[in-house]
Structure formats: structure tokens, C-alpha cells
Length: 66
Image (cartoon, rainbow, N blue to C red; front, side, top):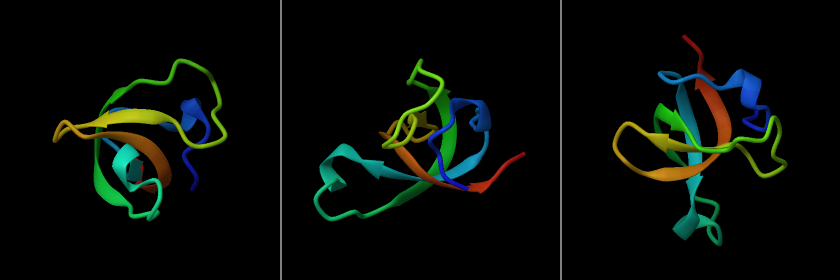
């Protein structure tokens, strides 16, 4: 599932995010959502979140929803 709809995102779900510094390479980083940072209901590049490990990025794929 893609991470472009805010309604699909909840704290605690496992996701793959693209960090700001990885935009050129497209490298994805896995983690668990701690906080949703995007306030808009949709975002074409992915909803921006803070992961439990403190990293911030845009969701590219939802791995598992609890």
C-alpha cells in the first residue's frame, strides 16, 4: 500500500520511508511510525512522518498495519 493518504497512517504501523538525504538515490529506510507530520489529507510524494528512531521521511510503502 502506498503512503499518500493520511487516513491510512497511524502511529505504530511499520513503513518504508524515503529520507530527505536519500531523495536522489531512492533508498528506503524501514521503521515504525511515531508521529504524523503532514496535516493535509493527501500528499502526492507521501505523508511525512517521524519514526520511533527519530528519523523523518515520506512514506513510500506501508508494510504492516496494526
